[in-house]
Image 1: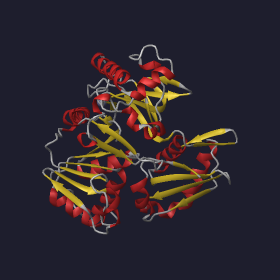
Image 2: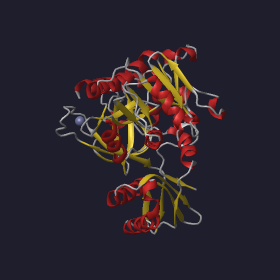
Image 3: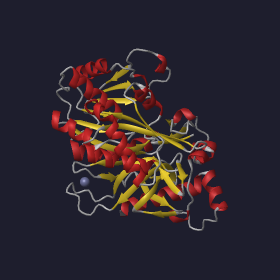
Image 4: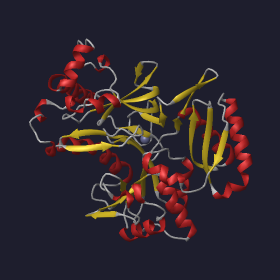
Length: 410
Ligand SMILES: [Zn+2]
């Protein structure tokens, strides 16, 4: 931790001396020792969005924005966030992820890669065909434009023959379905799949691993900071302490282990420092006592929901995390019938609707699933007025815009 503390101090020092925003914060919050992280307040997404130019370090003021790298994150609030990076800082912040990929899975930046993103494809959303972009050892697909072209997607990936894939659980599930349906083999070289952006159920990991001997690992990252945690071969998501300083916030208290909102400080971005930035994800952080992989960094146990999205019913506070837990219980009880879900709470009517996508093999058990889930929810003081089982394309359309959001309040 020693080196990482040094890095943290360097970032805090830099921000407090060179960024107008943080200089103002020091005055406004009466910060007496800027290199003491515990004195800094939380930085919200809204503040970052509203004051983005004030964050920039002096050094970059004269520079054209073209000299900086801009990373945009669509987020779930609909308000896009732009984070500016010095190119070399950005490169450095990707290194912790690469080091772990190499250590855990023998994947390097030179390995052939299939990637899914939106950033490369600005105006492509409306087009109907599968859109991809091939450059050197990387093939990228437009995540927002997969429509129902999963067979075509499979063929294109198979042809490219990547060693690894960076994708979402949703896309992986659809590819798996197509492969089962047409009895197709995965690309020969494919040995590793990294999933990010939404919750990856254990079941999917196991299926892919058992059927094809391909390892699936969970990546927790954010456009604003790059990698936050990567799952090791023993199933633990270790924090990249050399890229971000992670804390969790609960009842206005910050802690290094425990459950709460994920608060991150980027250890590499000097152009636009982010100190105690609230990612709005609910996480559980644990100490990594003795993980067989040898990594001693702390572990993130679950990532779910958006903390500020919760409602109160009969005096009980219900968050995406509670709903995720209930679904998990049902999946454990019934051998994993639920593949995806999300919940909508209509505040005015005090009505909770749960949308489920269940595996085809479980469609005949719809009623049992419905009743069991209702009783699990009731036991946890959650009153669901309606459970709707949908097995159609609504999931895909939803996927492009909303990532790991579980609960929508209307
Ligand atoms: Zn480990």
